[in-house]
Image 1 (tube, rainbow, N blue to C red):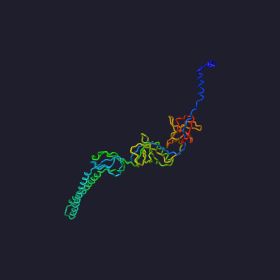
Image 2: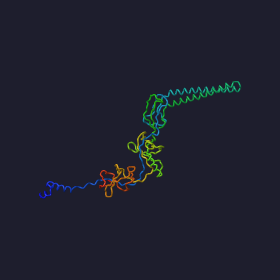
Image 3: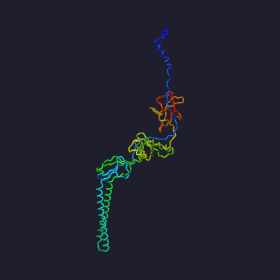
Image 4: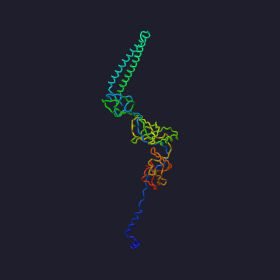
Length: 372
């Protein structure tokens, strides 16, 4: 037997190894079919939408300043708190301005007394001239004195009004309801018109959001509204910095009249109710603009859409459970579903889970989405 093996040119040891390996190869187990989850492409109602980066801007925001000089006697708010329209924010020591008002009122009273005397003298001179007892020049002089006295009363009255106005400025009131920031001065500080900002005041309800929209997108939104018979009033939603959705929708109330030449965008503004004070001036948000009426479109779950350097594609499972890579033209994503403009037909199954285990041309064990 050994001589026969040697005649075939194979050593005895190698022949034994080959005989040992052949049964092991014949007994190897078949490969496991990967399990995946698939969902059908469906025609669903989709609200046309577009998302943009925006910034929250207060509808009203002012820096409170002093109009007269004096020492701060009282601060009437808590830093960071809310104030009502007309409430006292700062009170300046009023004594000096009260004295100035009293002096101005005294000067006005004296001017009025002089005016009365001047009119009495004018009337007396008119009577004397009529009786031809006095010269016309005396009447002219008396008339001029009466006019001068009247002018003096007007000047004193203006001084009195100015003193009263300065006294009113010793109380610095909130021009509107809102929230105040940090106070720039303390009680006892000397303040005046040159002091600068005493405290910022921001109206918190409502708040507006400004966001730039590319001119092309704005034209598309208007064309869709015109084609569907909608008005140009769109529903606007916000996504806050932590990813949560702001519960109150807003409305667009302003579009700039010109396009920015540097960015080719149009500045849009939307207003939002802010009764809970969640929105803060200057915060960055994501703005989603939606059309009023949804449209029917072919969609697939967002996680089924994959992308590479060539573009978007999905993994389709046919009736024989064979995987096929299908290039698609993907549109916007809304509520977790992506619009498929072309490349798929309604009812075709696309892999949503287990895409890393599926390969084009391979057979998979596809379970419908939602099954346990």
